[in-house]
Every structure is written in structure tokens, then in C-alpha cells.
Length: 87
Image (cartoon, rainbow, N blue to C red; front, top):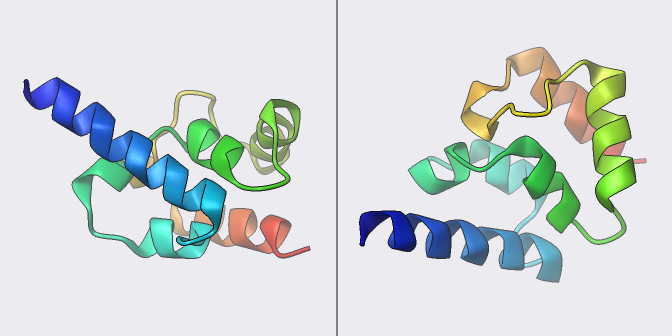
């Protein structure tokens, strides 16, 4: 049951990113444990105008592993992601 709740919570976060009711910066600053467990690549793919290819290219350019979760990002990686997305 717990796993299903966590998945639903992560799906909700991705939906909010997609609709623009939550920015990527807000997601990074969030202290919600469900945000922290979200894979960076799926958070990026949820953003409007960022698809699978762009999300992976962004992560590759910055040097973030494919399986990295939001909570595992370093300060420099967060900064680089936000700068790349603000263009």
C-alpha cells in the first residue's frame, strides 16, 4: 500500500510540473520526501518543452547519472540544471 501511495504522490508532482503549477526550482527546494525520491530524468521530462531526448542531453552535458534522484543532486548540479532550464 505504501509503495502505491508513494507512486501516486510522485505522479502528482510530475503532473504539477507538467501543468506549470510547480516550477523545477520549487521541486528542487521542496522538502517533500517524494520529490527527493523522484528520478531527475523523469522530473525533467515532466517539464513543458522538455522531452526524453532533451532531458537526457541536459543531464549528460551537466554530468548527472541517468539513475540519479533529486535528493542526490549536488549544489553545482542543481545550479547548472536551473541555469540550463532558464534559457
